[in-house]
Amino acid sequence: MKKIKNFKIEHIALFLSVPLSFVLVDIFVKGFLGFRLISSRAIIYSFAIGMMFNAVNYLLKTKKAKLIYSTIIVCLACILGLSQIMYFSIFADFYSLTRLSSIQEFFVVKGETSKTLSFSYVLFLIIPFLNFLILFKFISTNKIKVQYKVTLIYLLGSILLYNCVQLTFRNQMDDVTQLYLTDDYLYDNVYNKSRSIERFGIFTYTYRDIYNIVKNSLKIEDVAKLEEINQYFDENSREKVVNDKTGMFEGKNVVLILAESLNTWGIHEEISPTMYKMATEGIYFKNYYSPRFPATTVDAEFAVNTGLVPSMDFGNTAYMFKDNAFPNSLANLFKKQGYSANSFHNSDGSFYNRFQYHEALGYDKFYDAEMMGIELPENFGYNWPTDLSLFEKSTEIILENYDENIPFLSYLITVSTHTPYDENRTYLKDDFEIASEIIDSNSEVQYYMAAARDLDNGIKHMMDEFEKQGILEDTVFVLFSDHYSYGMFHDLIWEYYTDYKGDFHRLNNVPFMIWTPGITPEVVEENVSQFEVYPTISNMFGLDNDLTYSMGNDVFTAGSNTIINGSRTSWQDENVIYENNQIYELFNEIADQKYIDNKSAYLIERLNIFQDILKNDYFDSSVYKEIESE
Image (cartoon, rainbow, N blue to C red):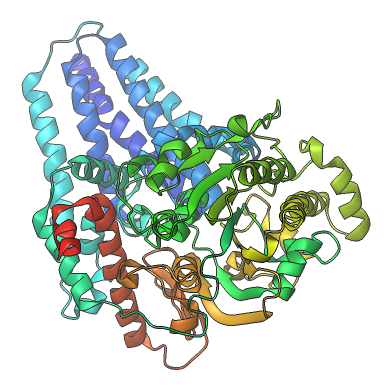
């Protein structure tokens, strides 16, 4: 009887250890992030997926092999859960496994990632330890017969359990505008990662993620999908509209500046007077918002340079779609007008794969820190090269190659205002002393303002050198921020900048401005996002462009715009702010549920089409080329 009892305990322990560990990981992840803990469907899914992995245990002959295999599997599950927590702590979203292609960025930005660490994460060590302890105690035999039938039954049982749950929860919606609210839609398209993990658990989300990666990696031209894209644009084409801003800068040089992590409050009359001049004496877009897509900076680059939607489903745009064709990018459009087009960044060129990525965007040459002769600091990742050095070196290159018969597009990506904001930023010492004398705030804000001053000094240097060479009058500066300084705790921001205290949404309200000598000052009140930058610049420089293929609108034509806040279920317009299926703020009674459903359905369809453009390399397809040739 004792042998039979021990035999049963041994098999129960072997049967339950890994699946229960998966369930615990799922519960821990949701617990740390404040999600709803009890979701029977997520628990069953996690248990079933744990069973799938555990089936291998019945093929192993020794206790040692079972212990090693089970421990490795559970440790990997814990690493997955913990890494998602850390990623969520920075980006307020979950990553796709294709983000592993840019894993170096996660570790290079040490000052940002280190802040996500918490002593409470040691709780994740308990799960593999308990799993090991249970198996070590209750698996008594050293040599065990391989049980192929048990493995097969166990595996089929896990698949049956998983699919039975999926078939049980089906949603039928008569109103197609509400289809996006259903779990059926969520199975087909993980358009809302947080909701997917809440409903189905972290392991089902990961399974769907891997499934989509494999499916999307097949480069076979899907003619039916390409025709569907064509039909959509036929039904949603846009006529070119001429307004009082059309062609106002035609033929002028343009300096396009991505100001890393620049906040609205980073523009200060005394600390950053050049940017203050640009904001007050140029065209300032007061309600410009950054969407904060998964790859933040590189996605902002993509939206502004192409007018398209960056990757939401397939991983980092700079890696996954570096070989795609973007014939209508700003660089390519300017080059059609006889411009030269080059890009500059005071960091490592391999960061975000920019050598290949910028070539895909149409730039003739990408200059990184090494190519410009800018030395990276020893504690790179906690410290960054100066933006002053970026503008000094890029100005030298621009002027050395300047030809008065060839206007230029120069795209500069800054780094100084990137987190961290502390004593690691050794080159900011003098700027910090100046900033700390002017503003009374915490040291992080003062270091941030010191970094903004360094950026400002760089812009001023370029303007001064251009003026000496007599080309400033013929040059337009376009500056936009990729996102706010999310590496700084929001309470520290609100302690200094009280205008939007407690309003998480307004944190994403960052600078976008256009300046050239003699321009008539203007403050644009309409909602604007990164998607509006591309069509607005295209119009103002008189570029030959079909805005049918642009996600956004020319600000001076459309007026009111809808801002996409980084996902398919978060957006705002003049009537409402809608965040993850909930009303965040209501401005107008017109935003009833029907209005919200219709707008959400329209945006989801449009965003899906723009994802299909990336996935199918639409602009390099035979279907698109046939249209262009007609």
